[in-house]
Length: 333
Picture 1 (cartoon, rainbow, N blue to C red):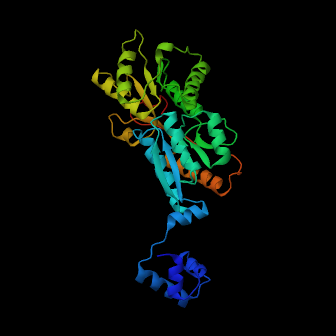
Picture 2 (picture 1 turned 90 degrees about the vertical axis):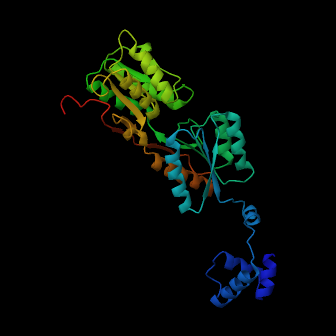
Picture 3 (picture 1 turned 135 degrees about the horizontal axis):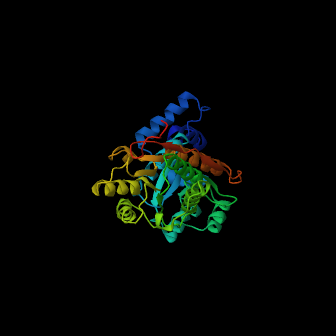
């Protein structure tokens, strides 16, 4: 059954039926009720696909995650969905597994009008490609930094976050601080390295290559590399792991080899996921406002959906040092 059939049965125009379906207040109550009664009796179902195609609007946005294994993305998505729902949008989630070809294919949904906009998290694609896509389609980068002049993004200041964490460890009297980073395939990973090195230089301490661990991704890596660090002739007295999962692996290793975390060796993480309060000792970490970041990312995307020529925005969110049991109290505290 079509909308024209409903109009004939209700003895009104197709325009009036359309207004009823769209809750237009200009329709008389008597006419509205007559149309609604016909719809109920006939079991008419609205062809939303055809309607959306005519309006060139799907009512959905796409969120591309690099992985589903990192809990920080679940919290960011929570913020995205909360804000999207307020504007009547659904969120379609895709996982790229950090593969460029996957992310490119997923972004084709913008070109086919299956989604009205896309948020990509820590994108694997080069900036030129992202810039070209953002010129034509609503596209926002979340939890990652970009130099693209037409790609809006939101993230924290990763260099300053690590710098602040290092300043705290240095204030505890540490002179041998190791850092455990990721693969250096993303801008934020280099930024965190810069924060680590800047703090050491300001403190006039050497940057020791044996204390700078890279290519780590998970709990197991944190465990294994901590074991190697503690076997050095001069092991570190503090370890700054650039993810909480890696830091949890550090703590497990130190506990097993009989090193007291928070008194003999301090451990700091990054992200402030729920795990931080589940392990013993509880983990000192850098908090990212993940839900708020997701909400901001959607707001920027929604502006682009309404007007693709909206000025590019760069929103840097505030980070916060959360002090728990895995680091010793400050000497003057």
